Image 1 (cartoon, rainbow, N blue to C red):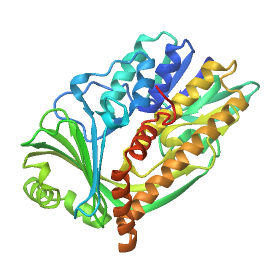
Image 2: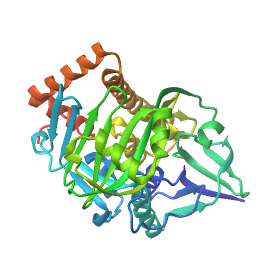
Image 3: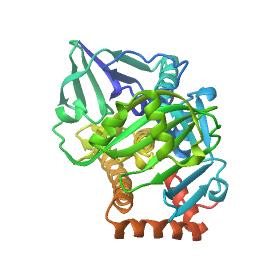
Length: 390
């Protein structure tokens, strides 16, 4: 039995749900396929998976009518970047960049839950949970998706938003290139004696950056990059030993830790799909690209993919029109390749040999000395046009 939709989106995570909400809010008949269950609300301690939403991403989410719970969001207005030894330092402030703030930090599950709450309000959206695609093929002017529960769905456009291990991408025969940085990131949620307020900071060390992402109140998410085995050893420490290690390695501005809430680690890899589109098919988010997380832009560029694709669908007559899909791919591949190159450069500049680290120090000094360049950099990082006036 075959059900028809205008657009099918595979993957109900943050990027897929955001696209479904935006297009559903615009009146398109959406079929959303999610391998797991519908998300549940967050309460109590903050989840380890935290993301930043920049100005463009926030605007895109709001266009769908999604309301974010402000009590679990933390806006930030300053970004402080430096070397731990103080040889390079630059501070980016939202006011200097012509913005009220740079965006906010939010738990992944909180954002996903808010988006799904909006989806439930939209009669044009049908969601299929606890299932996944096992086959896809072209049938005339539609693409058919066969699910592992026996359902057959069809649409004029099928979008893969099902993550770095995208099943839809594999079924479509799209290959990826990948790179292993041989690093691991330890994420530690903590409670601190000092409130973190509205600043996010990152210090570069020869073995990788250490960073603080503010959360509401006396809470923070700490990110500590290092070699695989070193990171795994830290992750295995008891709370008191881990607390001592953090206080010893992190700058004094963090203050005393009053509690280790949770910790986990993951390997750092880069991945890029060789193409973003197929016949009546498009890839967005991690299904298309995975970048080094040191700039905190992974979710944002995924949402920018969704934003670009949504605008092209809304302005066009046929959601799966190949010319529009080609335009989408050209725009997003250029932007995403630039972000991949930028994060690669930062990684090598600040964790490479001493001459490279000295060049990284110089880049921070230059950024601090040229306010116009800083303003343009931050507007670009927020998905805004730095050359647009007003």
